[in-house]
Image (cartoon, rainbow, N blue to C red; front, side, top):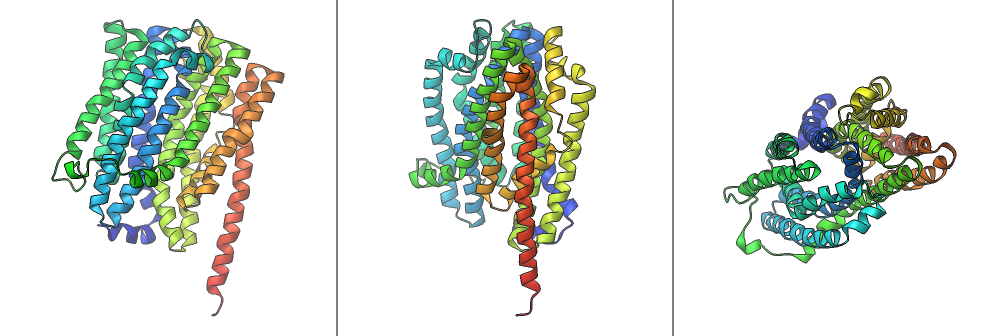
Length: 455
């Protein structure tokens, strides 16, 4: 099997390969986005418009928590896959133990600090006297279950790279299914409101985590917990965290951008404007996660063929991924332009909030006919091992362009200026991406010309 996969990456039809590698990732990503959307829908319908705004205020803190999770989990999963390929099973087991112990330690510290300073943190994020109780009620159970969340995502990544992608996908689907059943039960039947939605989230993750732990405690599995390796290896910890540093920094940057967005919406549009952004964010997230599924499928194909200097196949999978991604974002564009009120009404019955969310949704998707290309280009550089360029493109969109637009445009256009900042930064980031892609293509042509010259 280990020999078959590299062989097919270099010889099999690019279309067939993309379908094979992208489909599981798309299912997992779509399930994850639906998982996030379910809470918002039930909270909005069961707890009112201010609860939606309160939920939106928690996004930065949850992103920050996820950032620490990726610092451990993403790096460990990548390191594990390399070690398994090298047949270094003992060290891979130590990585598994590291994931468990480090997630517990980081989770405890993050929970203690966040719970201890929760009110000032939420105020800094843009909470008002009306939205603070909702945000606090949601975050307390989430933070108390933070260790479970970190372990669930971190260990599920290990299960995926250790030869069980279908089981990892099943764990995600299990979590979504249980959460969808428990949300209405706790919100509508037990009358627990927004706090009930948070408890449902942690319970669903707990059940999935138990299943994952059963897999990883099975001694028949190649990769399983072992007493003799159950300790922190700080050398392995440094290696895995250095790999996870890139997604960690991107998540942290995203966290601070969302804080700035929330505060701008609060200043120019009030609490409901934050709720409208929360709704739009959830809607757009579904489509973007599908695009990310396509880019995950592209990564092994592009990376292998780049290493094999088969640049024609590299560009073929790139163009096919761009096409598929632009189809997905075009669907989002159609929904946002022609059916924004229908989409927004899934989350709330409040007419003012529906109108604000529908208006913002239409503005946010203005460039979605082509934005799929920018996302693919950024991930394309990562697929080729050009991590610095990939990080630069990602951070450029968030920090170099979005923050200045957010600071300037609302002064002239008010709340609309906050909304217009997003497509404006998308356009600027696309231009930079195209310039970098053009340079890469020139490099490919030079290498091709060198290869055909007589030696």
